[in-house]
Image (cartoon, rainbow, N blue to C red):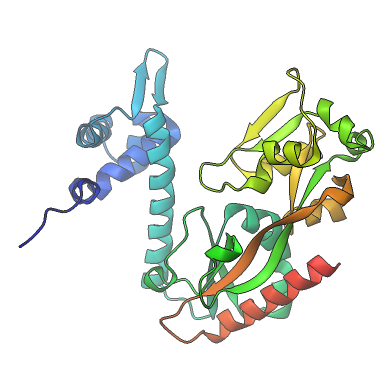
Length: 310
């Protein structure tokens, strides 16, 4: 006996690619006219595509006012997902239509690991393997390596979450960090009470070591009611704000190491560091590793170990 598909599957089946492309262009430019010009359509055609999508979802995606368009909360959420999906589809079509002759490795990882550690070191991999291309997918959503065609993934997890076959690359060290001028004023725990706090407020990646309540309970201090608090959804923004002297942040090695080595940040109260999550290397299981992926995995493990020792 056939069962009805879940509601989300029915919605997905009813959506057209043209409507999603029209919505993405309009959401990016906040203009039906600009979206129509980009897609070589009429303004009314794009407006109808968006209205059909809103009717299908049963909620508005745009705020239409006298000063122009704005996105609703649902519109912002949908735009981010559709934008990434269209980018991935475009990249996939490029690979299918024009297969690369050079060996390549496809790696999935988190935005923070990609921007703060991996990308700054790709030149070193290129010097070691100039014949290998690298394609990085930075997403908070874990990719299904076998199904989606990725060779490798670097995932952040607690030890008990690690699955069989995952290779531990490094354990995080969590530490308090600040710009040098602020760090010099924070010499003992009592000094922390007046320091502005930088919060990594992420809806997915949550664990005790990244919460200020954990550090306050552990070290025995409480911020005053007047203490400024700044919240960020991306971890690289937290470290960037800390380097600008905005406040005190929770540093995570290896992500914070480049800023520490460059002198942009300093460790506050070094004796208070603690272990965090583990960075694990995951390889697809449905096929033998390709030579390019094997070379990249070896370089990754070696470089990360050297960075932590340095």
